[in-house]
Image (tube, rainbow, N blue to C red; front, side, top):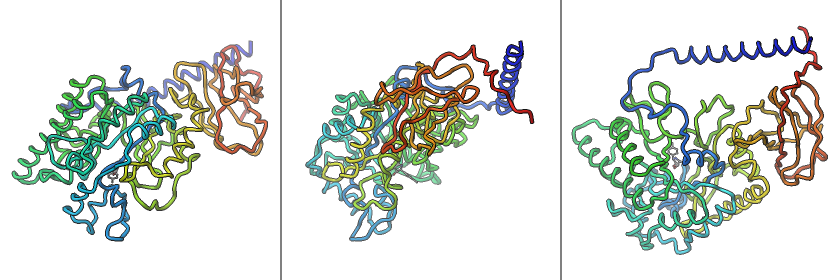
Length: 482
Ligand code: K80
């Protein structure tokens, strides 16, 4: 009888809480949305197969390669303080001297299959490759400029072989493209005069032709990753960018484009004037990771991360803190636990090989993934309160919740608080399913998993198979009166 009464109270209490949340949401959106011509195309997540696949990737690779890998952060013996791919913007570097690097671009050791093999071994499911960075140099033989690989001593296309090699490994390819182009004389930062406007109109047509060219040459690419879209000149092109996005998507059904491509007609970027995301996933998580699920507003997102503090292209000297394999794995776990993907950057050397530090990280991550990738692919937010030992990741559409453990408490007891309707059915090591745990119930929906040892060398994963607990009201645990 008492049990039943408590159950009823619990249900009523839950309903009141749910109603509160709904009321808050209603209050937040009570303002009438304004009519927008070039705002979000959709409210809420995409649900098609291409986007479902993107959502399940978990781990990705970024590649920044271009002429900047040749100076590698140094010019006339001086070290550039910024990211190496920005060296052209340094006062020490003349535009013509930089652009002449094209005549030195000759990556004789470049082997697309070798890069894709490294990525495969690392466990990545998608790769984003720079086709053209801010310097304007094209890694494909674009018909619309002479500033391409075709006119370098190397002569050959870089993008085609990469797309083919990654496709062969079952790794999806996304093409990075910088709208800002320091080489094209028609590029403007803002449009103030009639001349600017005429030049920028030419630039827009050039941009459109290059993008359609990329989609035509590399039709298996799954998406486009835009950068260099923040200047006023481009932000003022809401109508053009919107129609171009529609054109690219019509030409390439399923194409995935992030929130960094276009602004609405009021100049709002990423989120339109009504607060709705423009694009298929949030592209604002660059070198930063959300802290909690509320920070991602129910959107798809990925985090792109450098190994040193801020260095995308190859830099001969890596300054500051260099992230370790385990730090990167923790970032990966955190991203997936908050419904995102984690994308690690690589900056290949001018000869076409990957630097040893990056190869070592790829190998370390891959070795961990070989045992634990089941916890990463197809993973999502588990809806549980985060505990200090690490991160929960739920396998979409299953009753499995993974505990990715990074910090072992001195007690050796990992606390797990489940949702009220579920209990721990089974608990075992992902790397060794025979090693199972008998969780100790310590309170309403709460358990301790007692580890057998406390000296772990690497992060590890415990699998929880959840079981129905709806019959257990938790009434045996009395709440304190205060
Ligand atoms: C551009 C501008 C700033 C301020 C910071 C980074 C960037 C570019 N976006 C990254 C993904 C790299 O391509 C970097 O050069």
